[in-house]
Image (tube, rainbow, N blue to C red):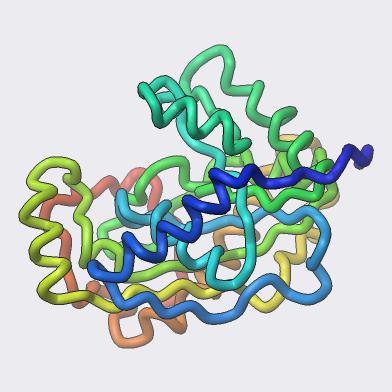
Length: 257
């Protein structure tokens, strides 16, 4: 991977990361385990996380700030088109993904450039809030695998659990009621950084497309493995059921019983 000048996070982004912990505190009890392994310190890394609630980005910001990671998010183009928010996203160095458009491929070179600057790039490989009936990660998109192949950067799984108990899928609909409930209950939300990157060596043969698909399966399996300790007592049905969340069995991944 060609080396570029090391990225320096804007002060505004560092401030927002600190503020995310203040925003999260009255709504949840955040528990973070793990962090960036010593072998990955100072270099590029692709953080891959499961996606269960609209509140996930705030929680990931707070968790990353707690362990000293300054991530650059890959986010849907709609966020970048929003007034004020879009300007902040661009200023803070985040990466736009225009899904379902002719410009979607532009995200990969942008991500590769960010990784060449030794950035930590965070992506939700499912590409949406997961709609698996049991809230396990769905089949992933190949973006993270292709980023790893282009850049050579390691892929580190991050699992989160419990955000759905604070802010449900339907937000911002009925957001006021959800916020009041969260303040009163302060559910536990856990974030766990894996202790090692995903071993993608088994996906180094075949056509580029086949390699990307194989690597994506390995990445999603590693997220599963990282998530399992966080929900040991709710491996099938979650204790908190988000009734506003639809189910889509089309992208369910096969999992061991």
